[in-house]
Amino acid sequence: MPEKVLVYSRFPKALMLRIGERYELLDAAGKPPAQVFGADQLADIRAMITAGGTPLGADMMDMMPKLGAIVCYGTGYDGVDLAAAAKRKITLGHSPGANASSVADIAVTLMLAAIRRLPVADNYVRSGDWAAAKPSPMMRPQAGMRGRKVGVYGMGEIGRKIAARVASFETEVGYFSRSRHDVPYQYFPSLEALTEWCSVLMIAVRAGGDTHHIVNADILRKLGKDGYVVNIARGSVIDQPALIAALSEQTIAGAGLDVYAKEPHAPDALSAFPNVVLSPHIGGHTLESHVAMQDCVMANLAAYFAGKALPYEVRGA
Amino acid sequence: MPEKVLVYSRFPKALMLRIGERYELLDAAGKPPAQVFGADQLADIRAMITAGGTPLGADMMDMMPKLGAIVCYGTGYDGVDLAAAAKRKITLGHSPGANASSVADIAVTLMLAAIRRLPVADNYVRSGDWAAAKPSPMMRPQAGMRGRKVGVYGMGEIGRKIAARVASFETEVGYFSRSRHDVPYQYFPSLEALTEWCSVLMIAVRAGGDTHHIVNADILRKLGKDGYVVNIARGSVIDQPALIAALSEQTIAGAGLDVYAKEPHAPDALSAFPNVVLSPHIGGHTLESHVAMQDCVMANLAAYFAGKALPYEVRGA
Image (cartoon, rainbow over all chains, first blue to last red; front, top):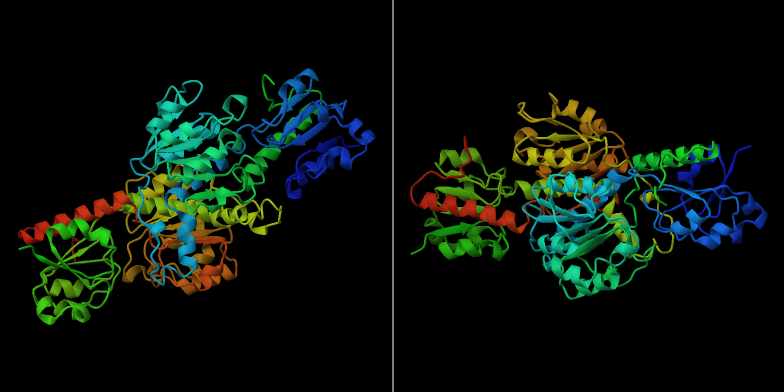
């Protein structure tokens, strides 16, 4: 009989097909599992799959006394209460690097689209305004990429891939990270120093208590009125009201966002800015990235049920 | 007294400010000059500034018997009747490479935006459909960049810059050009062979009689149903009705276009495709690119009026 695995977040079915061939999936489809499954069903669960950003605390863990493994689909695990998991001897797995290329690609896509105002441009053609020679102040030439100083915040696998891509656009690349890395980019000792220097800030840092709202009004002011901020990490890293204020007051030039304070993001002040490009948390959303993330999930589950250490374990958790 | 220079195409005023400080500009604002200026005024003209794609034939040249220099604002000069100019001993200048970085950037922007379906994604967030969990078949995961085979057609300055950028996305890069270049990319002996191999075709070839509609139904079929075509060169290189047919029949996956058969492009069948990204010929449309193009125009005009050879002359024209 296949092992039972709880699916805790809302995932498209296609993502779970391969995993469902091997395990009996109890899919709560994004609802609280206790609403969908009886206590007896939950009592049997030894492993669960979740999205790293979904809150998962002690109360939930306690509904599954046999739970021994939490497997995050993706790189992040910021929603998981690490202390609660450790206390219950629950091992934590993720998919490190599996989506790094796809996420780095979306970061660069958002950067270019914001700087070249692509959604506005696309609409200018489609609407017929171009053919009608309708003046569009938004289509005035802006500073492009060549010679720009681009700052990458975080130098993990995604940050490194972002930096490599950005460098090919004839830019100068700098970075800030907790520690200096062996990379061919200028190191800055603080986020403040990096932001003072650069005119594009690419956020690729791991989310957590220490980075909560770290990109605040002061950092955005340092970025300057020709500056852009791009976030593909987690919404919590940016003080979103401060970002909206900076865009309203035009203390920065624009933004590209794949992640938000609250997801899925509902239209709000951000949606009103034509100089902002918004995507629905699709950083890791490519076929090859999903295959790689599924590989990690399958490998983690197989090892766990075989009584072995997870091959993609979150260390120190 | 400053020399008189005819401005033949419709250019935003801001582009001509620097040039207007030095020369007396007769700006026809995109209209036929004979409608705007008297024959006596045109008879004096010794130099003109035009956009390379704007048709400029013998009849126009003959209205200005003293015309000795045609200076194109930008790289292209495909609209100019080269034989007619040569016959009249009119020298031809352009701005080679001045906009290459900006144009290469827009090529990559369009490629990424088409493959990651950015305009659809941006609209999915802004409309509230994401927040409402409205299913969107267009947002299903697609193949991303990693491991993709990208073909660059044309290996001039823009083609080289496109190739360098694209390679940073963990792709394989190949190219076809009239001759083999000393570049670290796989050479293909024909456009057919390149297109058979690649799943993204980046068009960076100089427009002319030999490349007219060279990207036709057959080439698009070879690109395949997972294939994308990106054109930042000239609209004439693609057989546009064949492209529309390929998109309708889904024999290719999508397209990114900055140039069109007729410009400015009016909404038509192309505008109906959500898997196509359209921009209003803004490849060279950045501040640094305009400064560089203006530098070339100024240098060409100064040399011409000083009786010297143009520093940025179209050779063999």
